[in-house]
Image 1 (tube, helix red, strand yellow):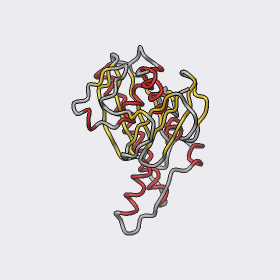
Image 2: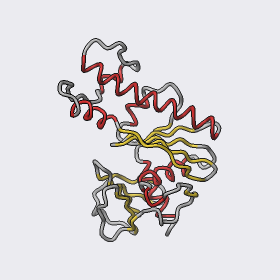
Image 3: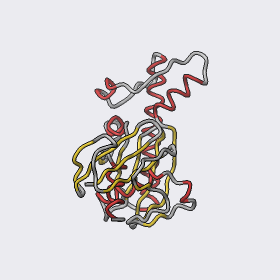
Image 4: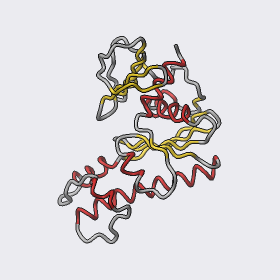
Amino acid sequence: MNLAIDIGNTFVKAALFDGDRLVRRCDIDEPADRKIFVSTGGREVAGAMKFDHTTPIPIKNLYATPQTLGGDRLAAAVGAWSLFPDENLLVVDFGTAITFDVVAERAFHGGNISAGAAMRFRALNEFTEKLPLVALSAADLQCKSMNFPATDTVSAIRSGVVEGIVAEVERYVARAERQFGPMRVVFTGGDAGYFAERVNFPIFVASELVLSGLNVILNYNA
């Protein structure tokens, strides 16, 4: 039994694995034979293996400054590779930040980092005097296309943020495919399901990709 722990900027997530099978999401004090964690904010988990750039992984890491690479990004890349080991991958993680990372030829090639949806909404509210704080709306999923031109301020903000993120994703997919060839696009993170409904190309959603990647890494180091 393995316990994988993802300490992110906003949430702490943990999952219990029996081999490669996800048994359940769980509390951090669940009994396990081995434990591994990744921490974005520097917090620690006693008695657990810390995953960082020095930890052996089953793919090459071609990042020029591996000591600055977020472990969650690398764990997600390993998790995606374990699902599709023979394909080129663009891994998009919709969290506090949105990351776009490439895995090709059994190697992590790096990627880009952008502001997540909640961060964009908050910035529009905090750095202006009159714009309200807006959030993603589940009601939007009933209609894939956002309003343009929007006729009210809330819709204008929500449409601008959502359509901007969708356009980013589409551009990164096109650019990655020009450089590496056909890509399998894998979405993960808290907003993955929302944006999976808004793109016009096939994607695979893996909601616990960081945790799955940590489990693969833990087994690789066993």
